[in-house]
Image (cartoon, rainbow, N blue to C red):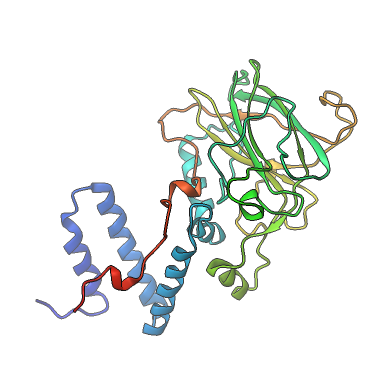
Length: 314
């Protein structure tokens, strides 16, 4: 037995965890303990502040459902999602590959299939635009029959999970490129929006005096055999928050604006965006997604429990 001071306790914890058989878990937890203990020492964390932090994380967890992922939102607003995304890209995205962006907390599996030229809108209305282009590999060779998942906010700046019953899917769809990797679809111009501010993450953002807004954008996920999934988004240049995205998702190469003078536009005169996507080869099988459909992270039914039901009396 030893008396532990503010430095000894870190080594004692790591020594006790040294029997962890999974080498990667051992590496991650040792680093996490070292950094968390260093953080507590650095800010001289008080018991009251420690309890407030626990209460905050508890509230974040309690806000999570099958349709809302407050922990992903927290990761987004502190830039951790972006950091993990950039590190992941550094190992798998080829230099010529399209810049990636965040999957975000509103991606859903099983979006309705739409034909080339079809529309994402099932319920919403708005200013119609056309998005078209071609999917190629890093050498410029067309990627045939690539699958595209597309999702965005409606005309009020809300995703379907926010605006409707969860059984309703709107402003999202899945389409298949043709044999030459070409695609085109219709949608409405999205609206920039505030992240959900009715939970603990929103309250944190308010306390930091941040605006909490994301610029108008359209999410796109592209997959094809032999290629790394491409998760990206197109951001509208005239949105006032394009330079201060609260989740740090914007890259210069992903900023676009609709035009009515594109000679090869599928519908002459319709405001259109041409964007050609470049996929990277899948060399290690690690995939391209950073994030998940919220329903995959939280099981159906009640989330959480009365703490008294989890611990024995005494």
